[in-house]
Structures are given as structure tokens and as C-alpha cells.
Length: 185
Image (tube, rainbow, N blue to C red):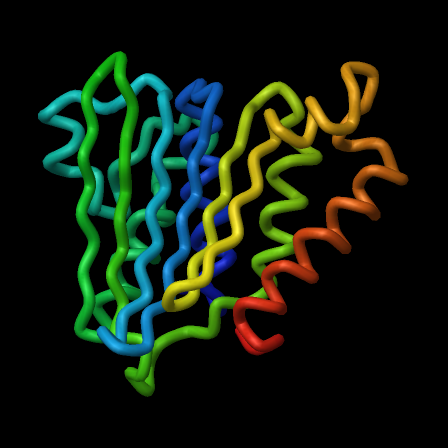
């Protein structure tokens, strides 16, 4: 199992990329009044057949050819269930997939969110041909980051994985996330 929820986000987003998604939406919502954390990853990738969808939570189900097991969804499910939460997976071939995980925020077994900034920066800089939309919400406050908007603001020639832009984006995203989370993850 992974030590942080941000690593689960990274793994599931990588599944979206492997499914040839051109747009990956990542939502993380923390709500104190409902005592919930919700993680949702939505993509416009290939999607899954109904038969595959029925078995996708099994760690021995994978589309990878490099190894015979696929642990990402299994790890996310286990992390959610350890907090009396759950996961929901919706997928349609040719349309995409949405994976939603629900956690009890105050549960003693809930993993920390971890370094969400580094997860986002890793995804963006290693996958420059893919658009990402990241929504991080804490109670009634929200931060949204979209690579399409960043590219428009920075100019057509800007490469999101160039070192100066990576430093800028890292600081920008970290500051916004810390302002919402109070610096705690």
C-alpha cells in the first residue's frame, strides 16, 4: 500500500495517461463538516469494457504487458476502505473513466494527503502533451489550476517542463495549496 494519498493520485493519473487520455481532471476535496475527503480522477481515455470494469478492482487484473498485476486501483480501494470509505468507478469505452474515492477524514487509519504539489508538477512536466485540470477544495475555498490556462498566460512558446517555468509553477501551486490546507496535508 502507498504511504500517501498523493501517491495514489499519481498512480491513477498514470493509468489515465496509459489509457491515451488527452485530458485528466484531478479533484481533491476536504470537508470538515461532513468529515470527508473525496478524490476524483476523470479522464477522456479509452475507457474500459463492462467485463473489464467488473474485475478492475482485483490486483491481478491489468492491461499492462510489463507486469501481471495492477495495484493502483486496489491500493486506492484499500486506503479508502481502511477509513470506512469506498471507491466508485465509472467507465465507458471510447469516452473515458472516472474513479472516485471517499475517505473518512478524521479516521485514525487515513493516510496523509502527502505532497500534492510534487504530484501535480510531476504529472505536468512529464506529460506535456496532456492537459490537466486540478481542483483542490477545502471546505468552501477552492484552487483550480489548468495547464491550458497556464499555457495561454505564459505564451505559445512556453514549455511547462522548462526549469524556470517548473520552479514558478511549483511555487505557485504550493502556495495556493498551503493557503487552503493551512500548510498541513
